[in-house]
Amino acid sequence: MNQRLHAFDRLRVGATFAVIAIHITAAYVLVSPVAYFVNQWVRFAVPLFIIMSGFLLYNADLKTGFLPRAAFYRKRLGKILGPYLIWTLMYGSLNYLVSGAPHQLHLLIIFWAKHLLWGTAYYHLYFLVIILQLYVLYPFLRNQLKKRYIIWMVTSFILTFTTQIILYLNMMNLITLPVSYQSLYLVAFPGWIFYFMLGMSAALNQDTWEHFLREHEVLLGLVYLISLGILLLDSRVTSTYASSIRPSVVLYTVSSYFFFYAAALRSKTVLPSSVSWLSHQSFLIFLMHPLVLMILILMAPRLNRPDLWAGTLGMLWLYLATVAGTLFITYMASLTPLAALLGGTTPKAFQSK
Image 1 (cartoon, rainbow, N blue to C red):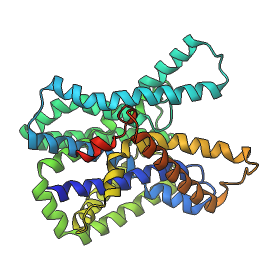
Image 2: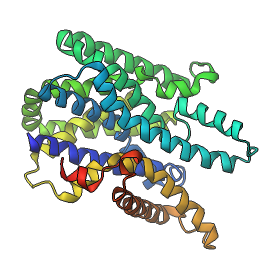
Image 3: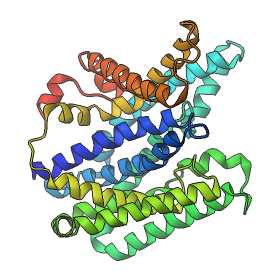
């Protein structure tokens, strides 16, 4: 069983570094073919986190028993809400200061409240709003999955796929959705619930699925490559490369999950302590890295090196610097009592897991 969950440690670490790659390459996609390819190649990252969330929640409940709804909310929502509030206040304050708006407390509070609702204080915080919705729904979903498995899997797929098609058509200006609800389109749970339910389904049918994955790794690799090709073609033809809300991304994410999971299961090596640490700190790394990236970008002109991060080579150095800086700050934060509040794990808590 430990090896099974270690496969998810490996997946979580890979997805964490993939998210960082998305955010760094986004500024280079129009000038660098390498950036464009990498940016599309790692588009599985955010949906994969949602799949893993569904799996790990349901897997834990199947082993230890379902917590009552109130107890579940106290245990799980607190781990997300605290860091979300803190990082929203931090990123929101930085955005407010650089926006040039009047420095008045009541305006700042309104600014915070707006971003807190939609997860728009910074470009990555929308993910937490999605997860919070899915966690709120989870006690209902877990009870229904065993009773009406096929119905709920089909329903969740229809919800997500239909939602993503509608948003996809809107991005291409083939239909027009009300502009005033743009923030809602990104975070509303119907566009993401299938990923969550897929993870829960993988936990419910773990033995069957893992047997299939081990027996068909080559086929899964072929499907993965085909889905990547479809994604790249879709991105090029429709110019929707900047979004992860697309039907082609659904196909690519699902194929990536199964292929990567099969590869992780095949690994016979003992999970290195560094990978385990990165896995447990992945939430804090996710929340921290845009701040480090912002600092590095602002540093360049102050060092009289405005071209420091220019070109494909500059992008590579920026990625490495962002990863190194984020890991260093995450490690330092993990040594303090603030680690859990920020989304990380203290050494004592880490060693007990």
